[in-house]
Length: 284
Image 1 (cartoon, one colour):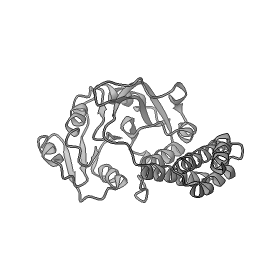
Image 2: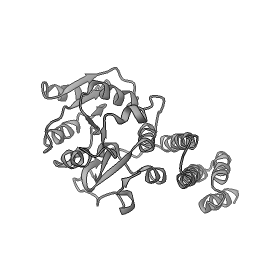
Image 3: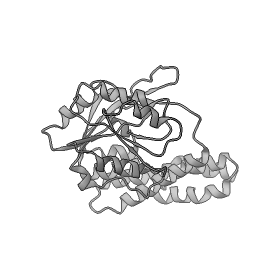
Image 4: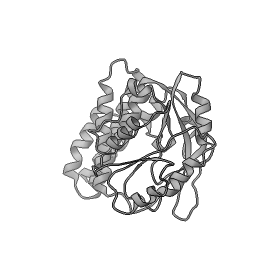
């Protein structure tokens, strides 16, 4: 569990780990210098988990890598400190992975958990429930949430660890590299609750995340041996992301700043209709 100032939620996340029907596990919590009482909550579990207290960096990749280094298990699972696992999650995933080396990782379906306690329908669409290469699915839509995953430890040496240079797309970059290196398998049932809370993401932060995702996909294009159909999907997704950024800028009255993104969208996918629509709207 990677955490920062989640005193209101982290106990529920921890309890969901201890409630797992698969009990042969160790729990490591990496605290990124919390100042809100998270440390006091963790102290209540002294002896039941391993807590790493780090100076605040805001670097989720660094926290994730620190947790991996501190762990000993054959499999590694991540849980955001405001999310919740349902009791059979790990058991179902370990059964899929144990003894089947074709799959390097597993992920589950999930539901959004709203502030009033209600849940959404399972989030994954049928085409996102995959057994085999997950790369085409991830390229089209980053649908694998880190809280839903279990990863075979040996895969980190093949795919790489979290890239600590990444500011806003560390999980996306990690899972793309993982999906290049190994196959995955999905538990179709919703076994993870992804909590929704707090204010809306700022426009600037949202656009920077799209730009960082573009950077990650551009790097993926440089990999040798990338399947032609996957490469085509990468280009389409890059065009879609540039168009999204352009749309937001045009809506904010910043048409001049939108033009380079529309040009990049046309460069990557000349037939991307939304880019043409927003180009016309920007001119008007």
